[in-house]
Length: 417
Ligand SMILES: Cc1cc2nc3c(=O)[nH]c(=O)nc-3n(C[C@H](O)[C@H](O)[C@H](O)COP(=O)(O)OP(=O)(O)OC[C@H]3O[C@@H](n4cnc5c(N)ncnc54)[C@H](O)[C@@H]3O)c2cc1C
Image (cartoon, rainbow, N blue to C red):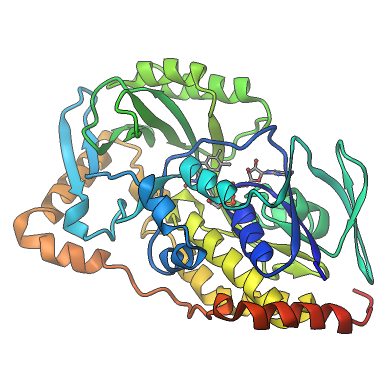
């Protein structure tokens, strides 16, 4: 009875979906372009309904075992002096540092460990998709052609599945005017569990976040910029670009740039939003960043992926027919996605001032907001709004659900899509 589902992308969304599909009796296969799991990335938050999903997956203990505690965010000057700070406890876990923080790579590992019964194909990707009444014929860059019942694009902001089935990236991806890079380095100073950001004029950030190993740090370099032309596969070109953008800056910039050249988990991308009006086309559906992404500025990408995977698999299992399940997945998710894609007021301009005066103003207002008279108001403003979604308990009735998959497959009458 197992419905064969091809998932493109073994980031966060792909393995999370594979987990739920296996649990409901489907037969997922995941194809990942990278030659092996990608360990990189900064700390990501698990809060609200995403936390509930991780509980329902039975993975909360595994997540807690790898949890990384950050005390808060500290802005530093070119000489490394504290200019302003946002302690996590002040915002009760609602600010930039959440209650459950885990390195993206660790979360990816937890999800991969939970899906060892799933077929993963690394170092390959889809090159063509042809849908017909009964399935999707898939051509791969390296492997032999195969046929699947459904195909899921969980292959991130620059989704190949999206460009093959929905049209060119330019229709769906909007650069917000910035770029960011993440990689691991030897730490130039003890971070004592603080995330540190040196904001330099020109809208440039040099940042360090704690790693499990106090000898290391998760570094990031972000900058504001109009659209740049570069090759997404050319890492040397991206590193050269960062060298040029950050040349001559203070604090630990030189150390971070040197570490960047040694790093084996280098990641670089634009700060982009993804908006796709309809997330499915026939037997092909989008999940996570491929279909909806608020950018790192909005955050919540991991939460949207985890919750999206839960709802997509749940609806497929509950209905048994993708023609109903795909639109229903979007209906259930839409309000929550829109809510969590919202950008902070002022967007990148406010977050990353261009001038020394703008940086001074941001630091001063941060100090003011976190001072005793204003702390209460700040905590209230930062308090997380309830997630705009009700999580149906699909998993609670697994046997019912499995029966409906079987029934749906048996009843499915061919129709042209
Ligand atoms: C290495 C890495 C580091 C990251 N670090 C951060 C971070 O520090 N902060 C942050 O906010 N966000 C980061 N992100 C993005 C973040 O993971 C996502 O915004 C969010 O978790 C949603 O997950 P996703 O699975 O939809 O997308 P992603 O996590 O981006 O996963 C997409 C996966 O698809 C794969 N892929 C891409 N193209 C193809 C293709 N043609 N065929 C097959 N596979 C393909 C990618 O290699 C990747 O593994 C990072 C992503 C990656 C891949």
